[in-house]
Amino acid sequence: MTGKDIRMNRFFTNGENAVVIAIDHGYMDGPIPGMINLRETVKKIDSDVDAILLAPGMLKTLGSAFAYKGAPMAVVRLNWSTVFCFEWGYNESRNVLAFTVKDAVEMGADMVLVSLTLQTGSEAQDARNVELFAQLCNEARRYGIPVIGESFPNDSDNLSAEAMHENTLRGTRILAELGADLIKTFYTHKFHDVVAGCPLPILGLGGRKTPHVIDSLRLAQEEIEAGARGVVFGRNAIQQPDPIAYQKALCAVVKHGVTPEEAMRRFNLAD
Image (cartoon, rainbow, N blue to C red; front, side):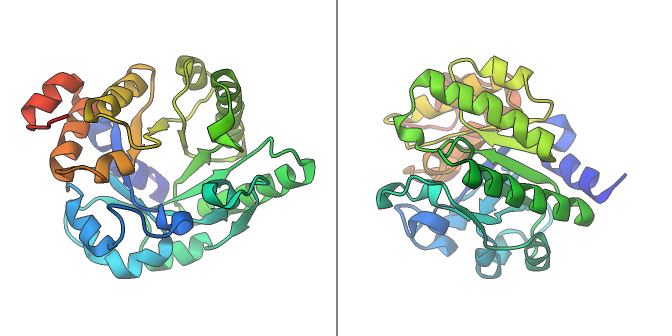
């Protein structure tokens, strides 16, 4: 069994679906509600979740969140992309290398995430984004580190449902062909087709904060029922009055097939 196999088996413990809590928003957004003081934020992450997604530079600050038996795995985002700078008016989706896989491993990472945006409107930019993604996948393979490939469309807020689906359908398959080990991406209205067209485990993302708690739990349920092997939730998991209770409910839905309504009752969540 390889190092990558060991890490993947830890991630999908006992074959269960995985729950990842994302707190890497400050990498592009700076401090946002619920993630202003990350030392306090990690205290609001339930130990039952499988991993925490964060920026590599925060590992030295938040190492205690990963330094005990049974702790969540540390997943770190390597590249920095203007596709996430929603408030800055950028639209070219330029990716740059912020950390190497070696950097991340030295800091304590168990897995890495690398984002890829295609259909930027520039053939040259698409090619550069692919080149960086492939470079990091090749480096991760040498270290036995699994790569979560993130398919994130350009100008995602302004895409029609069909355009989002087509971009996601193509993007997830391309990530698999380029060497990713699993995928993080958007849920679409034809998500079964996305799952069918990609040979890798897919993690559905949570996206923007939903108006009601049950809406986000229903999103998680729909993603799993459509074939996802887990979820990556950030704002919906952290920006809650009781984040721990919410995350326990999320784990119940994702890992054990509990309905959102029952999970709400079981963990005393109010909408």
